[in-house]
Image (cartoon, rainbow, N blue to C red; front, top):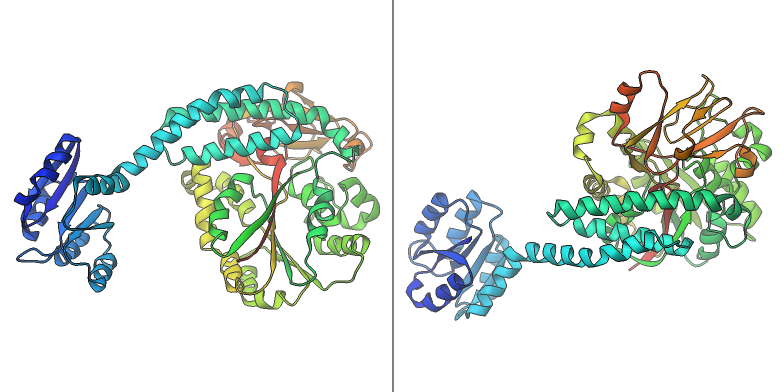
Length: 515
């Protein structure tokens, strides 16, 4: 039973309202002054809502309110008053009331206020649970129904939408059911992508892949009348974009949302170089051999993105533009971004690469405290939101929100929480990545991978004449037999990328303008 504290010096005149609430299942503790209200609040710490008369003898409702807030900052408080004066309402609101009612109050007003303050979360949760139970069968049928590419995109968005709705629910059972549906969807999607990937690479009507992203989505949309800013967040999944969208909506308006597919492997070295060069990795190696490093070669693998971008602009744009490439690797770079954001608007095009989310996923693997902070998908999304709200990039964007500009937000690939180890036997020259490997002599569980026997068919370089790639499907990750149990404990339930999953492959490209 929900317990309410009601303080009013005319409490005897409220018998009809009190009787109404008791019939509705509420327990009402009745007091006639502020002092008794404070005493009862100490005695009944399970009170879930307080109705407070503004004009009581002894200490006023506002004074009582301040003393309650000193004790309890979270309990909902409804101020009841005969006085509609604006300054009184401002004082009450400034003292953190949650609602106010003007006397005489009728029972339905009181009930509606309680529904908003106490029952709203429960009612929303119950409605969400009921709606998902109805939707469950539809999702199950779609997963098993032989979807085409656009239908897969929409199904993934639908699953993410339900994940985020159920984030607000306490129904762990439904969350578990949805998680199983997502796992089943990833199993089907991995088979689907494995079947069509090579065909899509050669087709004109395939998905927009990493190497086509700027050509197909960015360059045709560049404004000639205002500056264009591209922010590429490394490792930004679609669900993380949906967490950021409401924040951005305060200053920017989404004008178009598109999906592109990260190439395989869904790893920064391959997908992001492909984005900036406008070429598949094998073509980058062929045309710019001195600027491409294979997995087994030492050195930074994404050190020439500005060079690649310049070459792509020369090749594909029919006009000269003033452009700049900015990479944010650390806090000093981030501070410089804030200081120079207004200057970047003097360019026709500024491309900003922001690496924080990728660092977050890696740090979560290595630091126990971050594993606790981002224990599951909901917490990982929440951590992304908290970071963005306090990030230099958001401060920089807010600083220019009143300037005419076109903003694009995108990524290079996503990431998946892995939970199934798959054994690989290989020599020392084989790459160490957990979601893909490139090497000469590999033995592996065939059902867990997509194999690229000829990397050139996949648009990938061949470090050696007999090199081949394997890409992990679903939520598998690769482990060597040595110290298998030890590394299984370390990497199970960590966020990884490089393989085939909805989360890694299906990526957002968002176009926004100032409001």
